[in-house]
Length: 507
Image (cartoon, rainbow, N blue to C red; front, top):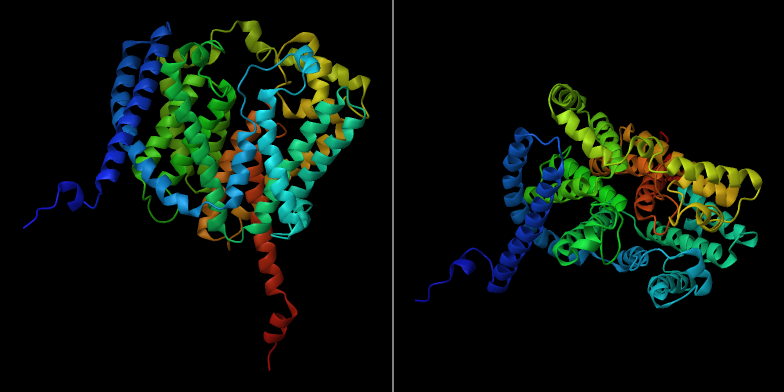
């Protein structure tokens, strides 16, 4: 009689068993690198006490073990998700891939000398493929997504993109404004075609999960690259974690980390039912925490704090938020933890650098001065800030604020539809969270999206978040708000349809 192996008796084929062991080893490597680097960062701080180091060790060992097994479960989660991927998921991915940067930002002189080279073509080709695919689907009406482009919140964002496109007429750099505006309009069109295709909340959730998976894989790749390219990864922005190939700024890494932490917390303890993949969400939380800590992104930390408060309020867990506040306040103000946190947030900057928001106030002042010289037209979307303002004071390619950037480029004509889309997203999400008839899955997702929107909104005041290609996070939260609006609007139309009203009349 043949005796089956242990692997087969547990329901695992040899190939799957080997894949699980490889995943566990990869998780050990990733989180081992993260733990080692966080320990190095802590040791460099003068205010680190033995108690803080002991706490790190106490938390680090379970984190290393949890991350190892969580990574193995992540492989299984992705295998289960793979059959759900449809054609529009790849459109979404290509728009995100076209925003990857594989070299340092070029100066104005370099762009003028050679506007299009091989590296630039690497970013343009995916966007051209997406645009061609959108046109083909529009021609064959599969689906007819053009009306969706000018409805609701998506319509407000489309108007913003068209204003940017028109501003190329008087832009200080016509080709730059024209291409960047067209690029943004293609991004919005992808969201429009998705909303015209998706009919159920479960299907739209696959887009949300797909986005978190991409960001998670991006962060894992960045940590894998830490021992391979240590100089490019840690010394590009003053010992803050950055991506080497492709180049990912510390601010982006911090934002991705904060969002993954928030999503993991919300899904680990859902409003209804129980979490089926606890190890996976522990892994996701630890990956986000390590990335946020190593990137030292203050705006992402502030956004995460606001998001946690809002999530507790809308999920009916205000007591938990109050308890966290009561417990953390004495630790911060009456122990050495407060001094450590403050020094950590200083990032070795001087007092003048802190007060100037890392030179942002100077850039914004110069930008507003340029705007006052062209108050009715602006200097051209995307080009006004880079070629008329920043070229004179710094090599930084943007003004690090969506609202100042848009004001300089398009005046109030671009700022108004952008603000309408942002405020409208907030209003719709908050309104539907108070809507009693909202389905439990929709309510769970809406709470998650509100938290992400809080992080995105805070981040947008200090970085390019809403208007820079590709605005994946903003399009995702705006898209879900618009999906909810259209879904409930369809319900009302069905309820108030003449045939239904006639059927409800008494005999």
